[in-house]
Image 1: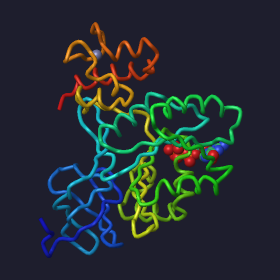
Image 2: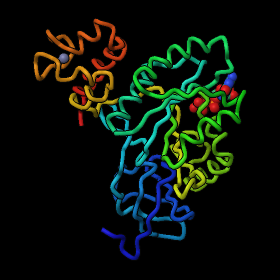
Image 3: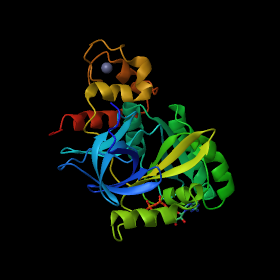
Image 4: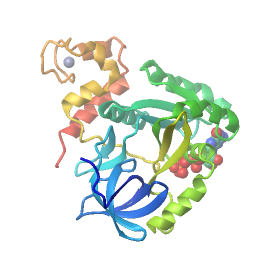
Length: 304
Ligand SMILES: Nc1nc2c(ncn2[C@@H]2O[C@H](COP(=O)(O)OP(=O)(O)OP(=O)(O)O)[C@@H](O)[C@H]2O)c(=O)[nH]1
Ligand SMILES: [Zn+2]
């Protein structure tokens, strides 16, 4: 369906509660949804109708290539739409939680998004060997790990990350304190100004760090890229993933799926289970199998 003459097409660049900011060819319009809908995500391409000089109402959301979301027992929360790559930022210090890293990776697999890890603060050399060892668990699963130091080696950091971001729509996520803002500021030199502009337009007052926002990257070979920055999180609920999605979202299970005696094996306590055998043989990381069990449990608790 093509846009009607009164409709404008743009991209959602920030979301704060039910208030959205759309970028329409460089012009920023404050947007609301019709009714009480909250089904819009940063990164969404939207068709809007202007209601005043700087306001509009969202009429339609264009078909998405991907949709990343979190959920708890009661509801799901959209994180970002149309992203092609996700970067989980971890660091030598403070300590990072494997649980959150793996949940992010599982969410990516389920959504068809390519996932990478960024190990920041490599300048903290006494903690580096241990952090590397932990990060290697993920590179063994096939997720690339990029070592950087936003503070001690800013130029090298940009050199490493730039090619990974070119022409992609990426999201950065991570626990608080890993250096995500430091990295974004290196990659988007005007990020501070953009944030002030966005929060003024969204009228978020001083809650400037609590919203998700999109920054455009300069075009490379005619392809525009974007970076989405999301607030630091402490939880990543995945209640919305079904059992079938879960077993496929653990990449290391793939060679064993179909090898269990029972076709409806849940890989928890069943006899002759290929996954459990692989865990026992040390071929599947026990921590990840435990997380799988936890996520199965969560998926059975959904109330919506
Ligand atoms: N040693 C070292 N410290 C760093 C590096 N990058 C960032 N930091 C510090 O780590 C702290 C957290 O950095 P931020 O960029 O605010 O981290 P964040 O992940 O955005 O955290 P939130 O804003 O809480 O979500 C700050 O004190 C930074 O100065 C680095 O490469 N090396
Ligand atoms: Zn099984």
